[in-house]
Length: 385
Ligand SMILES: *[C@@H]1O[C@H](CO)[C@@H](O)[C@H](O)[C@H]1NC(C)=O
Ligand SMILES: *[C@@H]1O[C@H](CO)[C@@H](O)[C@H](O)[C@H]1NC(C)=O
Ligand SMILES: *[C@@H]1O[C@H](CO)[C@@H](O)[C@H](O)[C@H]1NC(C)=O
Image 1 (spheres, rainbow, N blue to C red):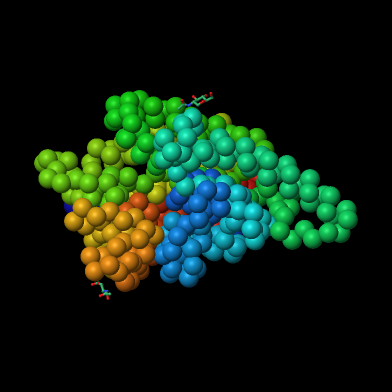
Image 2: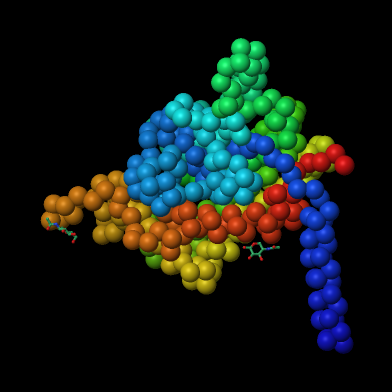
C-alpha cells in the first residue's frame, strides 16, 4: 500500500514537472527588445552613484574592475537577467554619461521605498526616488524619447541610443522593491504598526503595475522581498540573543516573519491582479525562497558561512563600511577593505549580495523554478495567441 502510494506520488510529480516543461515548450520564446526595471539597491545599476555620490572601490572589483554604480563586487540579478535575454546591461535613467537606452532603462535607485516618506535623505537614509517617482521618471522617459526619436529620424540624426516607441509594449517590466519599506518600518515604528501598514504598501506597488499596464506594458516579472532577518549587518549588532530569537540558520525570526507576511500579501494581490488585467503576463518570483535557500545551505554550495561579510571591517568596536578607509594601529590605511576571494562569500557588505551569490540566485530564478507560474523568463511574456 505504502509502496503503491509512493509510486503514485512519483508518477504525479513527474506528470506535474512534465506539464511545466510542456507549458514552457508550448509557449513561443519571447522576443524581448527591452527591459524596464524599478527597484532599490538590489537592482540599482548607477542611479544613486550618478545622482548623489559615486560608489567607491572595491565595488565593481570582480567583474567591472572599477566601480560601476552598483553596490556589489560585480553583477546584480538584473544584470544576469539582461545577459540571459541577450540584451546589454541596463543604463540607469539618471546617468547622463555614456548611457545607452536602446534596449531599456533602469529606474531603480538604492535606498528607494515603495511608499514615499517625505523626509530628507539625511533624516531617513532613504532615497528620494520612491516607486511613484520612478514611475514619473518612466512616463517622462517614454514621452520624451518617443518624441526625440521622431524628431531625429526626420533629420536622419543619430538614434542608436534611443528606444523604439513600438518596443515599449513587448518589453519586460521588472519590479524588485519593498525591502527598504520593511527596514525603515523596523527602525521607526516597530513590528505591529509595520504589519498593519503592509496592505497599503502593497497597494502602492499594485498601482505602479496598473499604471505601467495602462501605458501598454504587458509582461511583468515581480520579485518578492528577501529574508531581511538574515542580513549580516543586522546580525552583527546582536549579542546574546534570547532563545528563539534566531532561527535554525541564525536569522532574526521576527524580521523574516514580517518579510514573509509581506510576500504572502504581495502574492495574493498579484493573483488578483491577473484577473483585473487579463491582457498581461504577471510572474511572481520568490526571491525570498531563492536567497534563503542559498543562505541555509551556504557550505553545500561552496560558500563560507552566510553571516560573514566580504567587504568592510567590523571588529573590536571598529566599524568601517565597504569602501571606507581603515587605519591600522601601525598607521597603514587600507581602503575597502574586501576579502581575498569574493566568489566564496554570499554577503558583499552586510546588506548586499556578492556577484557570486547573485549569479547563483539568478541562475535558479531564470528557469522559472522560483516563479508562479513556473515558466522560464525566456518564455514568460504575454502573447495574444
Ligand atoms: C507623503 O506625502 C504625500 C503627499 O503629500 C502623501 O500622500 C503621503 O501619504 C506621505 N507619505 C507619508 C509616509 O507620510
Ligand atoms: C601594518 O600592518 C599591516 C597588517 O598587519 C601590514 O600589512 C603592513 O605592512 C604594516 N605596515 C607597516 C608600515 O608596517
Ligand atoms: C533551474 O536551474 C538550477 C540552477 O542551474 C537547477 O539547479 C534547477 O534544477 C533548474 N530547475 C529547473 C526546473 O529546470
